[in-house]
Length: 511
Image 1 (tube, rainbow, N blue to C red):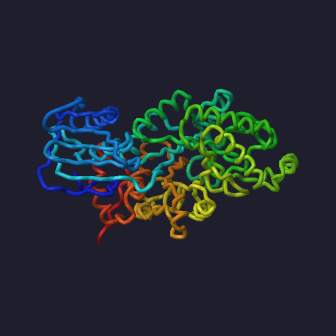
Image 2: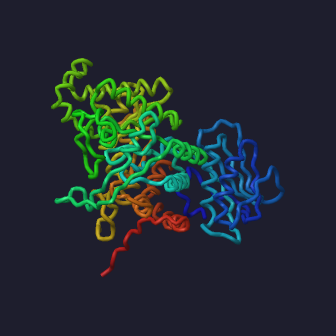
Image 3: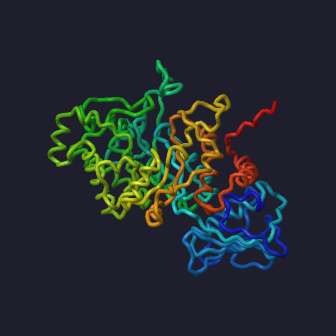
């Protein structure tokens, strides 16, 4: 089924000669260093062919052969050839071999218990960008571990390699921190949640307590599961704003020392951490435990929407600004960010933050995730910072996705159609060739205020995530909206077979 491969490979060429037939009796030959990917393939093909395929060291006749080669190659590149003797998957790395596995699975029908014919073909493929990600937000509505694992599988199916987990916010703290247990004992639970749209007046609440958190063992399980599928989990601890859940757990983190509840509403919150030495050490404790659990080279520290009114009104904060020589409130935020950067750098990690971390100055080691517009990413790249484009106009999948809102459930607002998602171009034309080298790629965001369960997650993510996957993987010159639409029609049958409740774009009425 070469007509619905998604993302589109860099090169996919039909070749002269017979193809082969794959069925449940076809063995998988695992070459040296290829056993993990062979096991992954056997698991992915089991529901397609009715049972797992045998994994062997050698075989005669038709087989699926996985090989690691030592030829120079891009880290995620792979080759896939189908001929009369079966399918041959080859790559220099396990990562590349993993992506070859995902492509081979797409070449079979969603269900083929009697087997399926594969046409002779030669695929030579590699991604355009090294960062191809999606963000999940369990801080607003807790997502059980099983749902995160399922989403990791769906990312890997689309050859996306980063899962950004937004683990903390005003409405909930979702990761166990053993040095500070009240973060989850108190901060992981809110008494109720606003009903309807967050901006509606008067506000109505559901009266239902909500919460949950991931133990450190849960996090390690998710990390291992993702790694086996060549997905890196990037954790986020949002600071110094978006911290009301932490302040609810430890009021001394706030600016007035008074108790407050975990936030039950949506929207930007005026509470912000203070800048006392005790608070900065608390943040270092948290990030140290995060690093102990998540091996990701990048640790996301947020930095967005940090409302500074409390700092402006606080005599103690103004004194602290003078003590530290920060100049003003933006300088104070920069001081906090740079201190966390020093901690992460000392542990061999890289700080990642939303584009507001540019305000007040930024250390050279930091990577910027630009969300408000392309301007933040442009400025960061020109300053020599690596950039991930997460621009809301093209990547915010909590937005409505069709002009007819009557066919969609309540969303935060905005409009981001499938075509707009497919038009996403991470490298702005304003950047020259050297500056463009700093753009690592992009990712889509699934902010969770209105995503309370699996069905809503599926509906908001798909099929727009399919579009983002192609914009980040396939060559720029291969971008073809009509061709993508044709391939997507077949690909959606795969999502249906996987039980993914994707949004179904309404068919325009005639007459």
